[in-house]
Length: 98
Image (cartoon, rainbow, N blue to C red; front, side, top):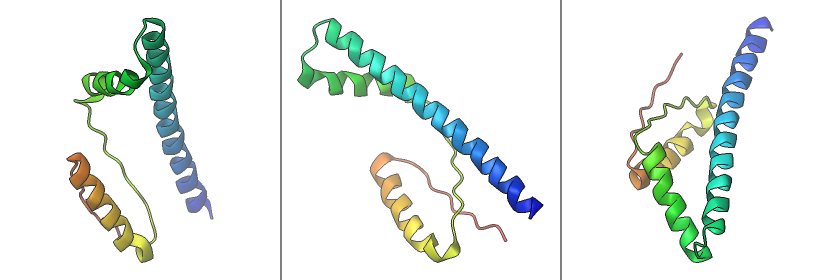
């Protein structure tokens, strides 16, 4: 029982860290879009400029993500991650802990 509680606590910490980073990126994006609008950028050009800025800022960063899932859905998860990695130029390393 205690072991499960500890794992759940660790998972919640990871989720909070991920959410915090997502919130920071969202806030940055929102502020950048506001600045673009205020400086007269056409609405149809905003997404292009935001995408270019994100590549400049976050382009060289690498994130390592650990996903825990039941073995019964592992095949489906691998297929999804493979498609994602091919589309986005990522490396997917599959490890199984016993």
